[in-house]
Structures are given as structure tokens and as C-alpha cells.
Image 1 (cartoon, one colour):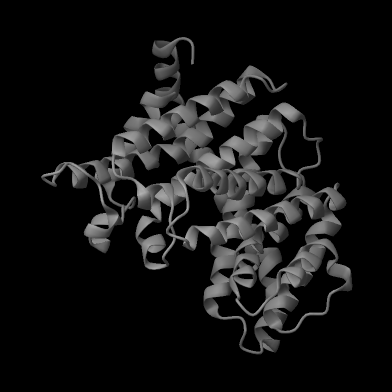
Image 2 (cartoon, helix red, strand yellow):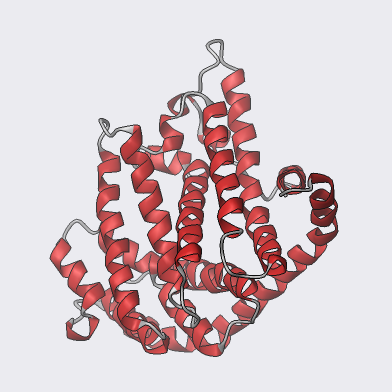
Length: 337
């Protein structure tokens, strides 16, 4: 931002409002899930053939159906300047909610790529093979029914599918840093565009560019936090391959600064852009806390190199529930704005 002193003061004064704003929006979405989604899920709990476990139900209701509309959807509505409509909330809830279930389906080695491509492009022609697919198909079609751009969403879903295909290369030890960066951009960027198409207002090119880069940055942040899990699954990411945390931090810094610049190129009002940036910055500030933890690990070694394979689960898990970590994240938030 241009005036750092003014921006810092504004960030400090806005912090309670950003927190309360997000808290209220998440609570609202929780109530929406209870009043709408739980009723939709109940029949699948009764007829479940065993392909749906409590893990899948929790992933749907407590994570994706909560976070996509309650955080990302609300942030997009803030950028636009008008609240989410009921149709938008329903579309985001259904299509956001099934993201985890779709990932599970993609990860199933028994499924063929053609089956999944038909699944996202021609759901009306597909027949579910189990309760997992039946729930996925049901919610996918309902989400499309509430969308203003169902065909665009299908086309974007195919791009998300293709990004998932590319991510399989992360299991290869020979994957290059450039390929990893491309996968990060595709996975995060295409997903954010997919969710944005659940909104009713048209998507202009400048905003699409902003959201693609933001999705990529969010994916990088997730990879940093998920470093232990990815190691256990044999996945190579920018974080698992990192040897100098300073370089990873610099990369994250540069990408965040680019987000700030790209936001100014959209046609939204400066006031709404500032509100939007405060929301996303609050979420991204926690990544720096995790990077600090990894930097300490790096500095504790004689060689001053970071090698994730040499650390324990406790050392690589950044617990953001700790008050000290939360306070540090707030300090980063104020510094970034």
C-alpha cells in the first residue's frame, strides 16, 4: 500500500471488525448448514452402503461447505459490495461442499480418468455406483441448478480435474521446481475460479487474474502447513523440497505483493478492495508464523539447511490454536497491510 503509516493505523483499527465480520459470517454459514444441508445429507446417512464414513460427512459439513461460502464467498461478496444472495449461498454450499468428496473420488486408483471427466461434464448422464458417488452427483447437480453459469462451471470443473491430474506427478522424485510451481498454480488457481463462478455477477478478466494468483498463493500456504502430511504421502511440494526457508519466504512475499497490485486493477471500489485485502491478509498472515517455526529448525542445524525429512511430526506441525502463534499472526497482519 502507498502510505505505510496510514495503512498500519487502518489495519490496527480494522482488526476487531475483520475478526468479528468473519466470525459472524462463519456462524451464519454454520446455521445455514444445520437448517439446509443436514436435511439433505440425512437420507444418505440412512441409505449409506459403507462408501461414506463419518470422515467424509465431516469433511463436507465442517470444512468445505463451511469455509468456501463462509470465508471465500463472503470475501468475494465484500469485494463486490453486496451480500451473498440465497442462490449464491446454495451454489457455493453444494459445489464447495463436494470438493473434498471429488478429491477422494479422483484419488481412487480404481476410477478411470474418462469416468471422472464424464462425471464433471455430463453428470445428468451418469449413474452412481455407490453412496459416495450418489451424494456427489446429487449435490453437484443441485449446485449447478442454482448457478447462473452452469456450463461455465462444468468447463471450469474440467480444468480443476486436469489440475488434479497434473498433481499426480508430485509423487515422482524427479519432478522439477518449475513443474511444482505450475501444479501449485493450477490446483489453487483453477479451484478459486470454479468457486467464483458460483457468484451471480460476471467475472471480468482483471478479477479472474487476481483470483487465479490468489488461489495459487493459498495453495502454497496450504502446502507449507501440510508439509508433514505430504511427506507421509510421498508428495513433493515447494515446502518438502525447500532447503532454505528464506527463499520460500521471499517467494511467498513476492506473490502476496503481486496480489495487492492485481487487486488495484479490478473495477471494484477502493473501499471494497481494502476490505477484501484485509480479509485475505488475515488468513495468509498465519503462513509467516509457520515459516518462522521452520526457520528456527533450519537455524538449529550446524549446516543451516532445512530438510523436512530430518524433523518430527511435532516439529513440523504449526499449531495455530496456541495464543502465542495467534498473536504473532496478528503482528504479521498489521505489518503486511
